[in-house]
Image 1 (cartoon, one colour):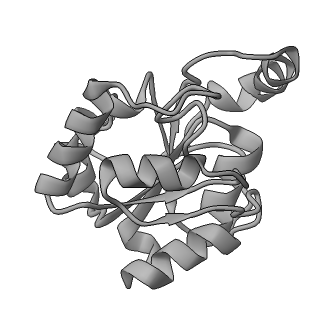
Image 2 (cartoon, rainbow, N blue to C red):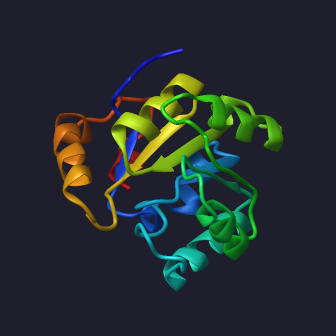
Length: 172
């Protein structure tokens, strides 16, 4: 297992991760973080663009699961809105929650990816679990602590692991 702080791919927002790209990558399970990945902190609704995107991803044959460190009801609420399973109190950067999602879906790590917004939790957990990491920009900064944390992640946010993708795939 590798301990990389560098994601495999970067996207402006989760909706930019196309079902076609996931299919090309061989992803059968996309694990989603909640806070600042699919919804801003402290909100209990999803933008229609996120729910529409999730429907397109599932229509392409990619399962979705939420894996969140959140201890409250947010993971359950968003899982209900999307109609997907969830794991809360995942303990990221530990890979425990990611591995549990893989086990429940019956998917090998090579066939999965995690979409999240943080290097020190999401990226480490994904890389320790052996799944691909698809980093998205945080939706909204809500407090100074998170802004500082994202600032400390900047060197890693500007890099991505080099994989055997074609030039066309890397341009997406």
